[in-house]
Length: 135
Image (cartoon, rainbow, N blue to C red; front, top):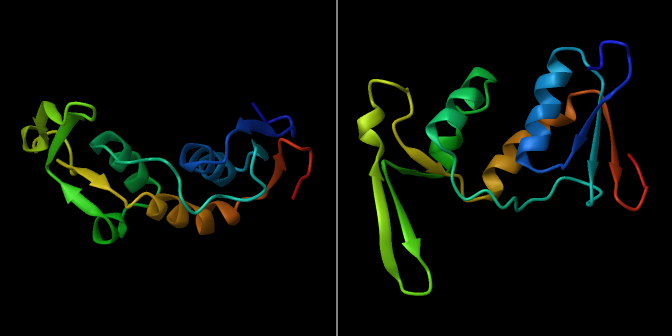
């Protein structure tokens, strides 16, 4: 698991991979991150951040400005794109006694990656892309 000095290998440099690298690096574990891109992308594909994820990000000190930078939605809807029909709706207010974040947050996609990049950059690690180049 990296305690022997060998790096923990992480496949993927999106928000989840960067977050894993950050948390492991904070624990003093060496990390090697592999991604097809040579640097973190400014447009991660994450559309929303759910309450459980916001709890974990808060513990890591990364959630403070996310609600300010994104769109907070207490009601989450699922839509069928081809028909334009609403399939389901969930009111996160039902979770108000279970979480500090009874909503989903839509970080305008790039905000999560942009917030994680400076934090992850402070973790000693080595990144390698699919073509074998590294940084």
